[in-house]
Image 1 (cartoon, rainbow, N blue to C red):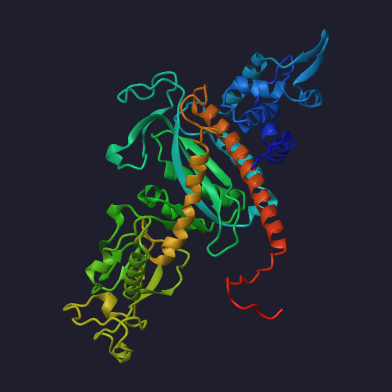
Image 2 (cartoon, one colour; image 1 turned 90 degrees about the horizontal axis):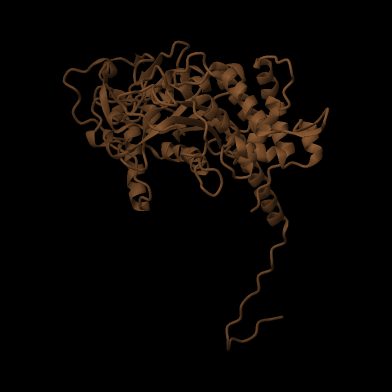
Length: 496
């Protein structure tokens, strides 16, 4: 399948984003006008990336000077000077790029993007999403990956030195434990990708937001701030946020609580240290983000997710156990109020189990689990009709589905979209962001190139999506061949 990215499509994204005009407003005025505008520079970068070239300014210059003569005149790549037509030189590209970098960088670089740089990158990625797909899904998959710096690494005991003082040493987990993970020198790239809703219609997996930062800053907290700002300023409604244990393991004040406050529901894997019983609340056991009866069997509380490629028989047994565990969970008696307080009801009072402390439950059918020995000193969860849980109870691990149930497993499986994005931007056949992909230093330059790369990646995704839809439409309209009944050799012929 041939993927086509046109100059018209790139210009449409830059125009819709308003990034070119916004950058021009930040650049200093000069006595002699610049031949290369900021919008044309962004177009040159995207054209170079669309052609599979690395993020080098020389490649952007080659892409612009290789355009048809009519487009060069329109974009200002070729202008009429006193001595005749003048084509853009590499020094002019380098000069404009240096001014843009200075205008978007922090006055005192600290390894995180400036507010204006983050806003411009948000505008570029948002503009690359067509209108019909902006509200097609509210679910987002999050993940981060490493983005190596071009600068030569410095010793770990001398951070903030060298030709790229913003870069830091970080861990790159290549399907290994943290103790065995590789070290890299550079930044963390976090991406938020649109995924289909639960039981919803398929949507193209488009990158909606990115952010970049060194290991001196928490990538989960940085992405949470970007998503909350997206909901507040861009009016994008947050639905399911799918993330792995690298995000859920963070303190709730920087990840879970801000997203819940913005209206999101978390669907996330739990770190092994956060799984299972994590204390009690008014006698109820806190486990995997839920409240359970104090007499819940321990083996059920210790359930963990199934490994990839589990046998169907193992899946059936696991789903039966998680369904049994759900019977012991305290039910939600009322939705959370504005302050995050929730009321929970005993599972026996809710009719899910039989317990001698709730005489009415003993009249239920015996297909329900039964508490054979009630607690000697029952606490509030056993004596009161309901108990109240504040926002701090299981704030770190609370999520949309019971962990690790079949519903959670099916919902969490959508997170692979974020991993596909990371795999795509590291594919040597297209654009691999390994060391050497970019030959400028500093976070500002890297993040702007990565934003351009995500725009190009979204256009590739949309092109492939449209071609698949056309193929499915033609296949559905194609008449099916009539099946012929095969006649066995020697069998008598049937009626005509």
